[in-house]
Length: 298
Ligand code: NAD
Image (tube, rainbow, N blue to C red; front, side, top):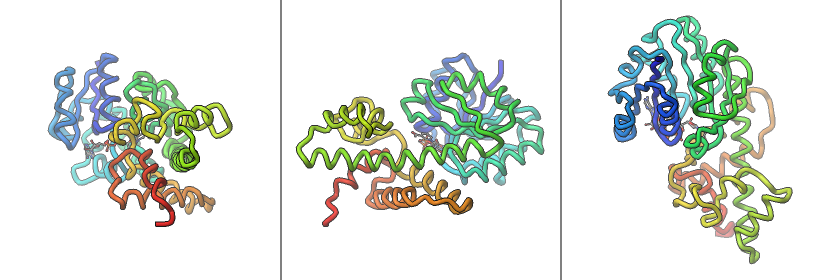
C-alpha cells in the first residue's frame, strides 16, 4: 500500500489527514506542535518527530502549512525534504501560498523527477471534516490524475486550473471575494439589527434574496444565527484573521504584478489588519463583525 507523509495538522490538515486514514491509507504524520500529531497514534498513523522522518519511505507527501515561507523552508530550506524524496514521489502542497512560490517549488521538484501539484482548498474546516473540500489545482495533467484518488477521499470538487501556480492564482482570487463578502455581510447584519431586525430573520431573508452569499448562508458571522460555525464558538477554530490578511496580501501582490485594480480587496485587507491589531488575529475571520460593531464615531 502507498505510504503518505502528511505534514501540518492544524485546523485544516488535521481533519484532512483523518479522512485519508478513514479511506484506508497508511499515514506518517508530523506537525511542529506535538499535541496536534499525538492523537493520530490512536488512529493507527505513525507519529514522527520531524518532517525528514515523516517522508522516509513515503510514496506521497502532502503539506498543509500556513504560508509561502513555511512551504519554502519545508521543501527547499537548509534541511529541506525535497532532496530526500525518492524519484517518482508525488507531492501535493495544499497550503495557500504565492503562485510564484508554487512555480519555484514545481521547477525544483521536476528537476528531481518528482510529480507535484499545488492543490489549495476551499470549503473551510467543516468541509475538511466532512471530506467535501474543493481542490483548485495547478500542475501537469498526469500528476493531477495520479493525485485524484487521494483528493476524492478529502474533497468532492476537483478543478484543474492550469499549470504550476494556477491553483494558487484561482484560490487567491476566490478568497479576495470571500474576505470582502464577509465584511459586507457583517455590515448588513449590523445595520439590520441596529434598525430593529432579528439577525436570524434578516439572514433568512438575505439567503433567499439578492444579498445571498456564502458568508450569510453557510458561515454566518452573527453569534446565535447558526450552529457549528466559528461564531457559535466565540470565533475559535475556522480560518484565522491573520491567514485572511495573508491571502488578501497575496491577491494584492498579484494585482500589482498584473496591473489590475483591487480597491475593495485593499480596503478589506486594511480592515482585517486593523482587527488583528486589536488583538483578534488568531480568531476566525468572521469575527470581523466585532470591528464592524465598533461605532465609527469613536
Ligand atoms: P493552521 O495554522 O491551523 O495550521 C497550520 C499547521 O502547520 C500548524 O499546526 C503548524 O504548527 C503547522 N506547521 C507550520 N510549519 C510547519 C512545519 N515546518 N512543519 C510541520 N508543521 C508545520 O492553519 P489552517 O487553518 O490549517 O490553514 C492551513 C492552510 O490552509 C493555510 O495556507 C490557509 O490559508 C489554508 N486554508 C485554510 C482554511 C480554513 O478554513 N482554516 C480554508 C482554506 C484554506
